[in-house]
Image: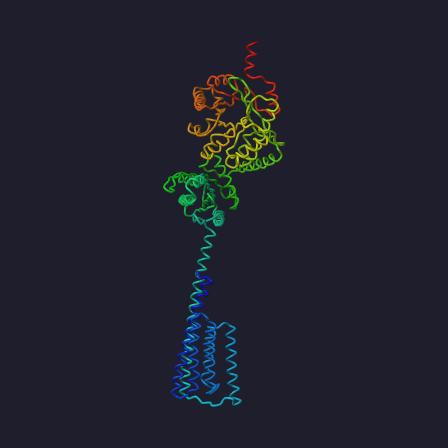
Length: 636
């Protein structure tokens, strides 16, 4: 590609070469003509031509030094003055030397800038005017008329120089046209390349969203004419972040390239595969006649994604989730299909990933409800509509009240008491759980400190932490601030985390949980047995308690298998020196069975339902312990 600097350098080189050539031609012409006039003893002409030829030498020196304008001016001006001298002492305006002025002007047009060119032309006009006036007023003396031989040699010299100049000019024009054609060709190639880059993804070379929009729109136009279907598949990789984090971003780029190749191989040549951005791809299936064709292609894509990806010597497993929208049923524009396919893709994610979902009105309703729920929760956070209920936790052997689990409730002015099972998942998905969880922690610590100052028995308050709080929020800082603001003793706080939280980022959570425990806070694994129960995790993580999930507790008396499961969990905890709490105890038989197995603590409807803070305070103030009840019963 030519640059302005390259153009300037090339133009300077051509100009220098033309100055040298013109000076050389003038030198040869003047020298040859001077010899011819010397043979006729026309020394006045010889002197003029000799001086003119001699002045070509300093002109060439200036040209060599890069003073092109000065060199050209000297050579052209000297030639003009030399020819004027010859005409003055010869035939004047009738002298054949006058033919040399147009030749000089041709050279000046190539070598001089416009201002210098017009100066030279004015100088020539002055010379011609002076010759005319000199002839009219008889100022010219010692005139020697030229001979036919003089005119012949002069004409030949002038024609020769003029011919070379015209050839140089024509040659330069051809070269300029060739360069112009080359630049135009490069411009078209560059324009074509820019258009390609603007419409394609630089990594995978697939069409980007902009070109995909055009291609899908055209496909829908054809489908409307042919009465066929078009399907838009929104493909989202399920574990791209894990690949990037484990093998690096360059390998992640290679991974995306391999995914693009597999997607392209999964469809027909007439179908459309685009990269939406990040780990998202769009596939347009054209000329379809039924939903079964879409299902078949979607299953093929999922199947191809099951094969390992080879990245830096490792075999990496991956999967994807696919959302599908169909033209014209789910939309008649690209944006409509994209929006509905995106919604269907999220439904596939929620269904466990590695699957596909076709958009339906149920999905639309679910998405709208979810959006409304999130919007209402944002208002609830601002308007303090969330409240805490507390469920008592008892020691199975002494019957003493040893703790309370803080459970968040949403008292919506329009909907009433909203179930946690409805709003907690939505809060985690939207990230609002970080703000809600921070409020829950602070409020639970504040309330427990109020009870301790009011004379409550020694007990701890348990607060559940969401995995989102670990991944998005600064959990340690939030906990420290809650304790500092409320003045609660860290030993009176117990934090509950699920097993799924622990396995997300093992090394990170080990260090985080260790620092939390170093504050004096107790840690419990909630819903133990429902996730990734593993002895190695229990050995690595610094926890104090296991809470047996209520699904095992409620089935405890229904079969030997459930008894064995609960018994194994209790023995496992005991072997590691951990406290065991059973959730969901609803009858005395279950309580007695857990006590025989060695369970340490219990909570459930048998003892008390979750209750507001005021009711819980009245509860611990008035209700005697289980042991006191037993002694009173024996005395009666």
